[in-house]
Each structure stands twice: as structure tokens, then as C-alpha cells.
Image 1 (tube, rainbow, N blue to C red):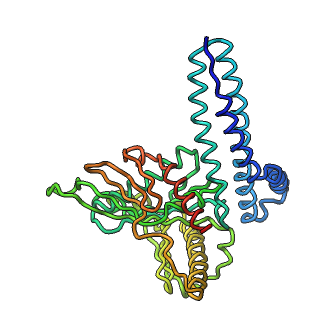
Image 2: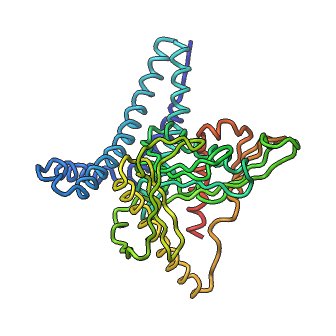
Image 3: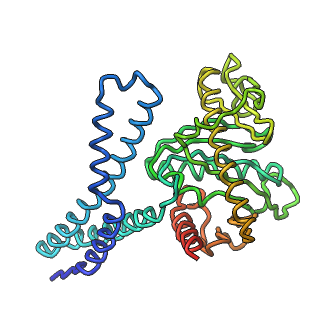
Length: 369
């Protein structure tokens, strides 16, 4: 006779989930959705396109937050019913399904619990991710493309919408740089712990010496910020270059000069956009990212000045925050948290939630120290 007892495990999940609901404040979340739904239903909403986009985006994000909460509630209830059914029917298949669901539900609740630690000013925003190849020649540009695929696969696994905004292909393998937007609630807070220098060590597939090659790539993560438009940038501070969008090997994918590159002369910040069909759209998208970077730079300078006056300047991130070993020991290790995985293949296929969760918990502990 089958006697499946998961009551203690389910109760533990319910306790954790109750804590999450308290932090999220579901009542306030529903009130936000009601308010935004009313605004989105106004007949004159699209008279102001910028405001309409902000309202609809905020509504979509709040609805996604509530959907995650309600889905977990239903899954917990369904799990208890499944356990009862398995015992009543003496059905080992149903019991196996219940154990499987318990494991996956635990992972989902754990991820949501980590998300409740994201209480930074911009943590709930969508994210713009930029990856740049560093030292290492073809291995570095190939590594940059591997990282881009890793984050795109991560977004795909979580069903997060992604828009690739710009890709600069290398003459040999891989990419020089790429910029893409992940439009999901808490995408910035979640991925911000991925920012920093990533290091790859492997036997190079591009050389005949059969020697270990070390290469680097930098990951930058910034929030999509409504207030970025408040940053005034004089036209004299910007150099604008237009060119044709191109794909791998220089293959032209546009017949007009629609791609735009903005260079902020005082800081040297460069932003390129080529995903839109018109030059006007690409310039507007590039300007939005440039304004955000300048706003964040200003805030970082102000924070650094405060730390300097207090005499407590410490680096938040090391030059190398994670290493990927594709030879010998086959290992991916985060140098800040100590979290590691002994099989790099799933990691490069987007299974990075463990690294992200460890990074968020590590950052939270540092902030509390």
C-alpha cells in the first residue's frame, strides 16, 4: 500500500510562500493593476505616446508579478490533491509526478524568494545588457558570442521578451559587442549581478599550438529607466555617425544608412543601434540608452564622492567575477560567491539561475554588513 507523505515539505513551501506574499504585498499589487488598467482604458491614452507606453509597460509587468503569485498558489493546492490521489489510488506514477512537482515548485518558490531581495531603486525595471569582447583575439570574440547566447537562452527559458538592439560582428569568429533588451519585471535587478569581467580558459580552437588560451569579455547591465529622458545632452556633446546595418562577414542586410552610432564626446561613451528599419527609430533608441548610461554615471560619481569623503572607498566588483574552464577540470566558478558548477555545457545553454541567486544573496549580505 502506497503511503506518500509530503505534508511537511508542502507546509515548508507554504510558509516560505506566505513570507514572499507579505513582502510583495499582493493587495497593493492588485490595486496597482486596477489603477493602471483604468489608465490604459482611457480613450485618449495614445494621445501621449510616451505616457501610453509607460502605462502599458507598467501594467504588463504588474500583471506578470500577480500571475506568478497566483500560479504558485494553484500549484500548491494541486500538489496536495495529487498526493491524496496517489495514496487513494495506490498509484506510483502519480506519486512520482507529485515528487517531481514538489522539486520544481520548490525551485520556483526559491527563485521568487530571491526576487524579494531585489529592493534596489531600479531593480524592478527591464534591463539592457551589453557584452563586449576583451583581450584574447578570436577566442575573446567567440567567448562574447557564447555569453550572448547564454543570456538569450536564459531569457528564453523564463519566457522573457528579448529585443536585440545592436550586434557588431568580428572579422573572424564571434562578435565584438552586442546590446539587447530583456523586457521583464526585475530583469535589471536579477541580471545586475552578472555585470563584470568574465574569463574563459580553454584549448583554443583557433590556433594550432594546442595550448591553453585565456580570454575575457565584459558584461554591462543597465536598467530601462523612464527618467532617462530627464538627462539633458547638448547636441554639441554628441557625434552622430550613420551607416548600413550588417550581418556576419559584412553581409549587408539594409540598403539604406539606417544604423546609428552616438558618441558622447565628454565621456567617450559610444552607443550603436541597428535593429530598427529607420534611422530616426535607431537614433531614438540609442539616445535612450545613452541618457540612461549618463544618468547612472552621474549617480556613480556622486556615490564615489560620498565614499571618498567618508574614507571608505572599496571596489564592489573584482576585475574577474567568474571563470569558465573548458579544459581539464571542466568548471564554471563565481569568484565572489564561491558558487560553482562542474559541467559548463548547461551553463552556456542558459542554466545560470544558481549563479544569479548566489550573487543576489551575496550582494544583499554585503549591503547589510
